[in-house]
Image (cartoon, rainbow, N blue to C red):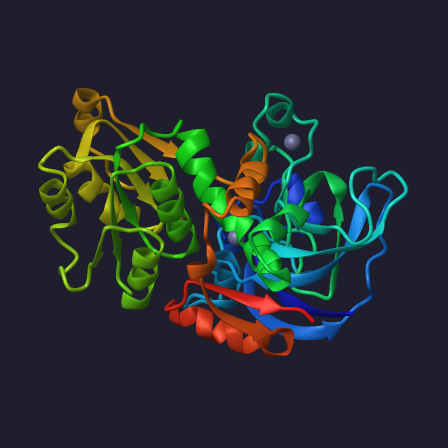
Length: 387
Ligand SMILES: [Zn+2]
Ligand SMILES: [Zn+2]
């Protein structure tokens, strides 16, 4: 089968302490500390054979994620920008939908022909975190398309326990639309997990701000809108993305470059009648710039939901958090807690309409062009069509 294979040079940075299992397994928990000079190639590789507890899925649609782009982009010394778990060479791609082609002997809930989407957080189910009900914090987590082979390929073999049946989406979408929506459950799931699971949600009527209108920020906008936020303000630096945010339900959008990167918090205060916003979602990964603005404009008992990634520290004025009884919630992943089935139901009902997020589709043969386009960051979600 054809697959997009990413290879790279293993060169752990001096000063990065490799644990015993990282050294033996030749993987890095923080990819940007060990992998250099990645090469992206379409290759012919053996089609995987599903193990007893796996299903072989014919991939129909696969999104390009910011973390995939961060494997493509390198810093001045040649190191990749992706700071999560990485093991190369690897077939990448983890936001996908497809059709079950073959099932392992012990697979009981899925059958050939079912349409499916899958979680990319491959929780083990038996570690302390998993047994405590926190699969996204699994101590032995593997990441689809980053530490194990992913879905930018004709086929992917994956454990049944990570797969969700999306046949029901046909109530709201035509055949192609089912797979488009299916590939968006993963990134929208990350926003759902942050806002509703980690931070415990919000009351109808709450006011909200989203920093960063990439796919996760856009997912947050859509969820805030359908779940009853009374005001949604979005900041980004790319006009195209701000327009998509508007299409997905934002009330006000601002290009921060036109604001000279300042006065964002003041703008939030102005638009909330000086009450501050109840929910502030960070999906920009620019904590040093966004957190001070959020501090200035949080309502009492306001919640900051930090979904962006940036390997830096940020000063926080904790006095704001004492007097305001405010909180910052971190969140990673989209597994457990009914996140996937609830998003599937919201999509099937037609209430959650993620279509506006998709700004481009490329055939698999042009996947390398899609990566070049991703680096410009003017798109919402780019999907790769496997036919
Ligand atoms: Zn992703
Ligand atoms: Zn686990």
